[in-house]
Length: 411
Image (cartoon, rainbow, N blue to C red; front, top):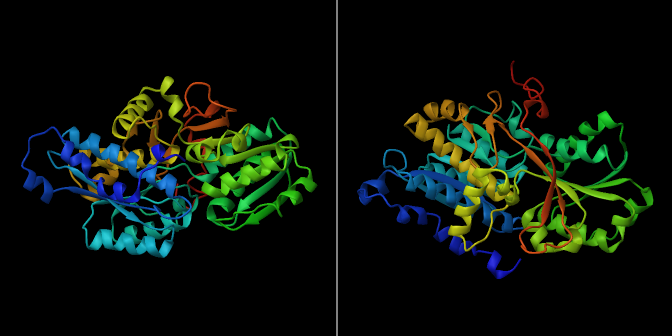
């Protein structure tokens, strides 16, 4: 990642409230400061997912700026309170408690880990604060972790792996090996692939696990080659994914099998380069290139470019934008920040803020939305940001989610 494509943590923390200063409305500044709508935003600015977290902060700032410039909630402006959760559930829980008890936030949005978001959700639901998670998790929708205060703007592994699996298993073969990050993200993605694979009678030849933060896959890749799969599914994230794909490319594995991933990260592709990702197929909740067909994506991208020096938003950045914007729009529609009024207002949203139609399913507050199947390009010809082709789309459909009953919710 070049210096032009990065932003320092200090700058992110320092500019989280910049949108307030930019508001064109003439209002009583002292009153606005006292009455701000505060949104806690814990994300892992340090650690292996730092690049993705930085983009989440940027995109959340876009949502704050748009809300404030539109007059806020009857003149009441919003403020983003960014905290570093260090990709650690305990740290995240501590920061969440501080945001609620010391900073008196109204809403919580954030997280970039299945385990971390569950820790934050446990804090918020006990204290009756609305939390919109912007990280993938199947568990957060299940009745044991869900509460009326829990919303999930992100895709979940069942949706993501299901979409990619249905595409790949119908085209590239039935013999599958998984290379899996050994924590919730990896295991939930593999479960989603296995479930989707039932309809295609896939044969799982192996599921090879590695710890988060792995830097060397050279002892694992020959084992996979010896199994001779049709498909290698690399179910990991961030730098783990970049390193695994680089080494798999070096081992010549793309000539022996099709490599897929549940999620291909825009930031990861930029960091690792075209050779590592070339020909790899995966899923995403958002790719900026949809702006050619979707007006809301064009508007979001243009505002992001304007605020951040011509850069375009990433997939996980867009989730932060949506996660913040839906809660602010819910509050605006409710005319209040009272959770008991905001919850039904958010449930009632039928929105298209950045990627096409979405809505929150009533039983588990999962955002029902499209999943884009993408393939990494060999080399962008004109635009260095144009790194993926969208080769298929799973349109928004509740049928692509686990049923409410399967999650433990009453019909």
